[in-house]
Image (cartoon, rainbow, N blue to C red):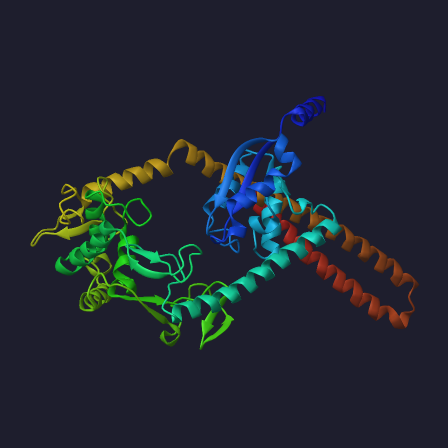
Length: 470
């Protein structure tokens, strides 16, 4: 108790470690980071706290936490005890999720010892019923406001696309050209960075003129030092996104997928059937833009992509080579594919990316050698001293539970036998006081009690035999 008191005293005298969280769902001025930071600056506790971390998610909706990387980082840091108090402009900047999700986030922060303080509402407190009710009301209002925003935006974006404007961020190799640059309104798509335009052309040319895969194209782009759309390395997904995007043939498509809450169907805003679910083509809006590839090449790519959906190289489902797929090259990460020479019983696995731009050496291994290694590794792991001790402990626990169960059954049966003996003696004594014409009923009752006792005695004998191993 003394140690605990000293620990609390040291914590109370230490300077609070603070962190801030800022979220922008768009580039609107009222949601700007500067405005939110100015709000946080007014919080008295913020002025005295030791700022240890700042978190910010820009142009991301607050209706879901999974797609906010800094929010996730903030929650992990809170669990690790990196800060004591989190400062926000208002609760809606932290989250606009359902009330139950909002409560879960705040409860997780509270469990980590983190308080949440906002400029608009002060410290978020839900430790008592009034505070909890107010929090639920605020969370519900924030969620309701998100629904209204989704309704307005769905309608406004749909109408903008019908006018030939592009309501979203420009995709790779394009830029937004605004009718009113000062207010960034009326944006249409125009060709962007020249290197990005040439990269799109290169991707289509490689896919059409060679028999390489999307992964092989990503490998070549990385070899040439060309940055991906997010500035990092290319992969199969980023290459495929380029190959399937309608904008590159001069027809950017708006409204192919449903929003999280609202969507437009038949010209009317309706509740979304599911986030990112595909809409009917009749509800798509085609926005004309400069083409980077011809319609003919774009359609040829789609046909080739479709033909490859069910094709497995070199055998469907890996054929008889069970390790084709799970096995990957240690040099480049490519898939190792099984093969067997004609008139040979030897199976081997080789790197499937060796023939794609020759980026990897012909890394190969025989199946028998690989299986011998795997069996030895599995045996070593399963039969290690630690695992054997764990297995013995598990068996002993199981036997202990069984032994305890047997002991309980024995105790119960012996107790039942004593009760039946007592009932039989009482029935015999009762028979001496019972009129002669009722003796038959008492006899039947005694007979039933004795049958129950014999049955209980047999069960007890069986349980004790099992317990002693007899």
